Length: 600
Ligand SMILES: [Zn+2]
Image (tube, rainbow, N blue to C red):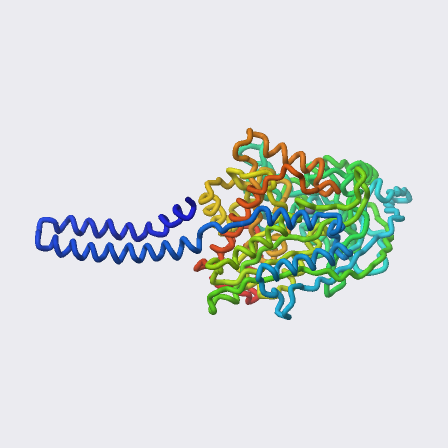
């Protein structure tokens, strides 16, 4: 059915030509002699046409049919990768060793070529693990008054600088609202104020600007309305602080805009993994962290200010930084260790000699949390859904590309990345150190956590409308009889939370799609019920395991969809582009300015 639909589309243009010809033929019917001639020529034409169209159909039908994907094979990989023997696939652990070897062997068995130019299936990803000594105190002072905040209870702070220790001493504290500088929204929270060496207190999320047409809603034209833009992410806050030369950035934690309670921040105080950057991360602010809402309120009081009043002011363009008249001091000492991790990379070489140096990349993270804190009697974080399923899918998608005649003109890279759970580090490393130029990378398709509950009649695209990839995906979904829906939770900023994102930041169009919620043959609400059950009971817990009631038909449906999107992009005449006005278009413009021209 799907190939049939597609075939009829292939010939639409041709059909139009026939009808034009038929009109010409009708016009000639008064002249009998010509009729016969025309009949013959029409017959010849039609024969030729059907031959051409039939050939096109054959070519298309054989190449564009949805491929066979073996759901049992995906399940088999998932069972193995999530078994106790793989020890939760922790980055830098014995579990990594087993996982990387497994994927390399499976890539070889599938018939992939080594994805690295050095002839191997791996890309070394040098990481560091930084553990801050929790025995620290954050002290605020004002004219002899002093307020000590306790580590973990009141604030969580760290440094990403690769140094043994950092210290802030009597650094002036400035409230900078949301800390955003966004010329495209005519927004600047700094107003030229010099914040070098200062401690910036920022609010989490995007500035909430009311819609002039309906003040009860957020203005969809400013910071994406309800959706979160990158300006709302905590990672942006630390980056802008560094760009402006600040010494420290502390974000006030509020549960709703952050998307999680303060306990999550408090739980995130162990070893932090990071890339080893050329500047040893000395370009970052010395101190990064969060403070609790209660402590922020108290600090503002100590400064003679009211938190809520300043917060409201910060939601307007007129906001200016407010010197709180306080100073901040803290000392953080680190333990640092080196970790040699790896991305696994295999490729299908494109069939067209002129195009095989151009790539479509599938990304999927192999890592999970390894062995950790015991919950309900288990300490191995199995990560079956998250993301053994994605890796199982990656292997089987690769296999499908190698089955004749499915090899596309351009090359396909299968990138199983490390340290996603530690902050998208494996994908960030590849995007910063690409094996093949990003300028020749058409697009990235990310797979994180597959559907294991049966077929759906819908599919979600996160950040729907960002790039031409979404149009391809929408078309492919339609051929499967599915409808595309936007992310039902845009305020959670999911687009910034998996491995396609570092590529998007570099200007490469990236697709982040997720399972639908309307399950075929299941009552309304079933989809949301299983999502909520998974998130509350198993997400990032040892109990994320393969279950006997799994139905892999949904994973197969989703993998066929991912496969076809990649195939179409690899065969297309044009590179996919960001849509005008899309968030990452700016970066693309930047890349063009520095001479990095993506072919159109
Ligand atoms: Zn995860």
